[in-house]
Image (cartoon, rainbow, N blue to C red; front, side):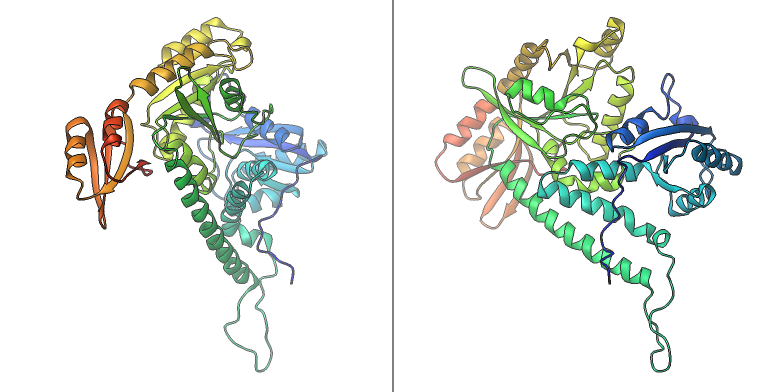
Length: 436
C-alpha cells in the first residue's frame, strides 16, 4: 500500500491562483489591500495570480466561509480567468475547504497551506525539515476526511466480520505515530541546542526578530560579515545563524538571526519551530528589525509583538532597528515611527547608515547591562552563595543533588568576582520561561 503518512505537497509553480478572502471589521486595515500579502506569499511559492475577490462580512459563514452568492461569483470569475487553484487568505476548517471546492470545482488551498509550502521549499537543515514536516502533519491530521472518500470498512465476508478499521482511522494512527516520532527527534535537537547556547558562557547575546523580509539577514551581514543568505522573498531564513559582533577594545557580543514572523502565523508552525525560537528566548536583548519603508510598518510591529507574546518573550529588553531608511520616501513616516517606538535607530543594512550608532548602543548594553544567568555550583560553597546574595539580585534557587542552581540578575563586573572564587562553577543561561 502506498505510504500515506506524509502530508501532501502543494506545488504552486506555474499554477494560476485566484485569490479571495472574507474581510471582517477586525482585519480591515486602512490603506491596505487586504489581499496584497497573500499575493506576495503566492508569488514566493511560485504561483501566478489569476485574479482576486473579497467579501466583506461581520464574520465568515461557518459552513462555507463565503456566502452562497459570493461562492457562485468566485467560481464564475475563477473559471473565466482560467485559474487552476483558489487560494483563500484564511485558515479554513475542513468543512469550509470542502464547501468551497464543491462550489467552485477547483482545487482550494488556504493561507496555512501556502505558508507551509514556502517553509518546505526553504528548509535547508535537518532541523528545519523536521520542523516543517511536523507542522504539515499537524495541519493534515484533522483534514484527512477531506482527502479520502474510500471510508468503507476493510475486510468483510464470512469469518472476517469484526470491528475492523477504516482507512481513515489507519491513516490517523500512522500520522499520530509519525508526529510523536518527530516531536521526539526535535526534543533531542532542542536539548542539544540548549547545551550549545549554555556553552556560550556569559557572552552578551542579542537576537534579530522582525516581520519576514524586514532585512534581518542583511543586517546580520552588515554587522558581522556573516555571509547569511539574503533574498528579496518571504521566509528566506528558517534556521538560526549566530555570529560574533566585534564592538572594539576586545568586546564581542553574539548576534543571532532567526525565522521571520508574519500576521496570523499558523500556531502549529510556532509550536514546531519552538527549538529555533528558543534562540530569541535565551537572548539578553532583542533587536526588532522593521522595514521602515513599508507603509504598514506599525501594523507589522504590532504583529511581531503579538507573536513574541505568544511565545512568552515579549517582556525581554528590545531595541528597534528601523531598516531600509535609504528607501523611505516619506520623512514624516520615519519620524512617526521614531516617535512610536523606543529606543530606536534609523539604519540601512545596504548603505551602513546608522549602524555605528546601533553598535555603540549594543556596546553600552553589553558593558553596563545587568546579566540574567543561572550559576551551578556545589551547594556547600557558602562563600560563593554569600557573595551572590551581596552583589546580585537572586531570582530563584533550585537544588539538584549536591549542586545548587541560582538564577540571578548581576552586573558583569560582579560576575567576574564570583568567577574568580575557588571551586567549581558553571555559568548557564536562564531556562525558557524564567524571564521576568
